[in-house]
Length: 244
Image (tube, rainbow, N blue to C red; front, side, top):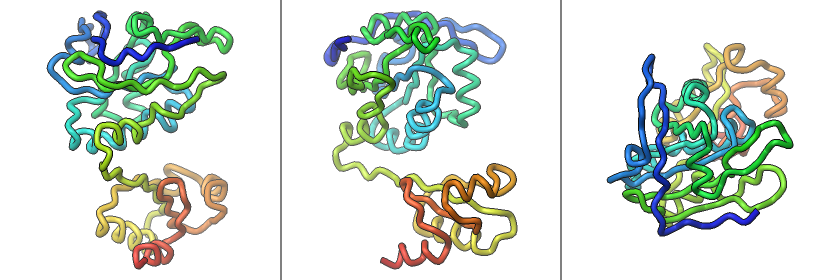
């Protein structure tokens, strides 16, 4: 299937049914794009593997960086209903993102990016892409290549940020696995704080098991620190890294 880059065009005029609290709210494309600079990323489905593990989380993690670089809003679009999108937002702890439920696929179809995924029981869904929209006009699109499966190569948050600002300083993704009462864990978190790193903390027997820790790191000791997917090790290894 050939996808058309619609840079220079206006976003489609579409009405959306949104559930806010216990009420239905009618919104349209202008509510999301008029008078604002918006980054929109679209994906095949809420709760699906790549969408939940990488695509949405990284846009959420870099939300503040987008804001610092002139973006007014970051919008996540999927061909799902508003209830699913609202629950997924809570599950992902992503309150800053704007969830756009294209439940009928009308927006995706008018973008020329509605695809048939009936072979895996999905029906019609959005192809994966991202775009920068300024006052309703599409300035740049990053459309995933037409390959079998679910390619994820160009619609990621880093690619969009580097387009907006080639000199942007993209924060590193940091995760630390800890346990309550661990002095080495406290030392490692203090080091990260002192160096200005934001990090995601996972606590033993609350967020993960020892089995999970061994599967990820090959170790049973905590803390275990990962930066941009690379295992650094514990507090001592973190000190060594910073000393360099």
